[in-house]
Image (cartoon, rainbow, N blue to C red):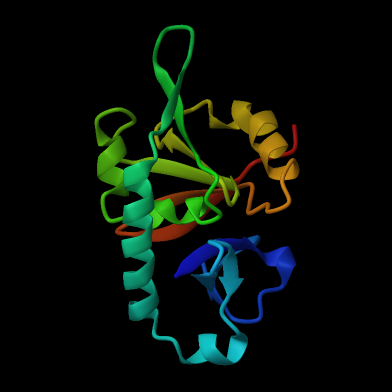
Length: 171
């Protein structure tokens, strides 16, 4: 399956995320104890992207089914963002679940911005939000306070594919 990974980890075999300078997708599998195991480079080179996408979609859908997003509202009661948190080291892959966008269509809207500060957490913002940057301290705190950081980039998900559209600025 595919999992977002920071470029500073220097993944040998990685799939490029359009527009991204800090994040890539790497091929991983679930180990015997449920941990993330990187697919060795020689094996990753021969894996077909279609097979990786199919495996990722399946595992992501299964995981998304078990997770209840937490919605955070502003003082007017309007949802600012949803937060997906789980102890699974594969949590960041839930964005690849086929029904991911549909899950948020009624609460956040059909067009989403995503931030994946670490393997265990995903923030989902409405694409039309004008206040996303005000959450930079929260994003940076979650990025820095983990042994498994991913990114402070902002992504959009279009037809199941990630595309970087921005990056949080240091507060």
